Length: 115
Length: 107
Image 1 (tube, rainbow over the protein chains, first blue to last red):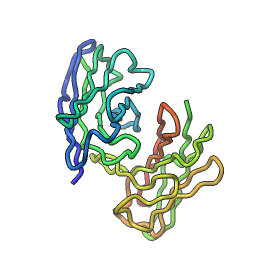
Image 2: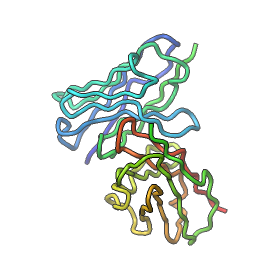
Image 3: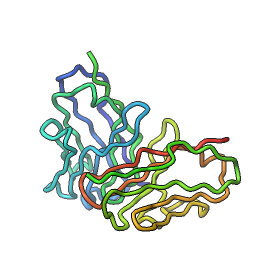
């Protein structure tokens, strides 16, 4: 069964950092691009970042450029999102998904940025 | 950025109804359009890809269509399990953009 499991969320103060992980199983992780999508409380879906299958190409939405870094470890079948200089507007549930296919999605992890 | 204008934002309907949700793209996106279903507290589920193709495991009462820059998701004979929020997504170019969502609820 193809599965994605996010971890690493929680409460963080504005300006601080947090790193999310997404553990993949049930498919050959190194063959697929991957993406992070977020959803603020009671709001819609918003793409955050995408990484190519080999990590050589990355893409970000403008509001997170220079603050967030998407990366992957194909040996560990794990996707990451390093989030620095966090702002209150980054508060959201963060989902990982298989890029291009846009499925499946993980269960999501909540990130709350607040003092 | 490509804007995806989704309508309606709310859609009251009765069981057995046929309903249609539409997304209009601000630029050409070809058939790089997907539809997702999201139930409360759950992650999104892919329903339609390539504008018209049913994703694996999706009931055949769901269908997708395209007319120019308008993309539609139709549900025939609505069932209670279909009550959810539906989102469209264009992934023709970066940044990928979602529609604002349509909340399908019982009338």
